[in-house]
Image 1 (tube, rainbow, N blue to C red):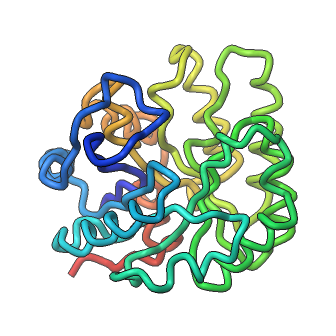
Image 2: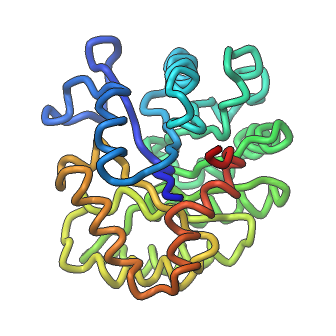
Length: 271
């Protein structure tokens, strides 16, 4: 089974996406998702938020409920500075909400992930049975470590491997910060969102580092489609990811491509 554990859907006509470049400003629908996943042999997906808007989370849950099982879970948005259950428990199709995310990378403060109110909010999400996706910058990795240490009962997933700053002076700090975070067994990493990074000639060693520090049992595959279309079509992203995993034994490759997502996000197995 192959699970794309990180993708998006959106319609720019319905809400503003401040981060979105012009090349992505058109609608990506469930039918588009179904077409590309069928072609790539993907069995299940996890749909991830794109804006800090609770209305989007409700829409994503409705989309997942109407997907005939293709979208097996949703990582919605939640304000981590407030108790999370009160933000999500009244949503329709709440059973499909497998995790929450706050776009911490947009917070100017490098210490934001470790603020006391954020720790309290994340703890409330964990107590509600939700995975917490971490979308952080390299300079926020030390605070992310303090956060995961403060909430040992939570399950965390580091989105996009914290976007390695390839070919920059920050790269050594990224390597050290990711290794420190991966040393915590309740943190998994996502092998996602990497092909749109600059300096693709340096990507191989970064992927090798993620595999080394998280191991094949805590690394999760995701395409980041349709953001990934900036680097190539869906099939290209899937095949490039599989190529990075080809040296692994069959069982370890299968874990990265599907099993780890099922276990981490508590997704249903295909019938």
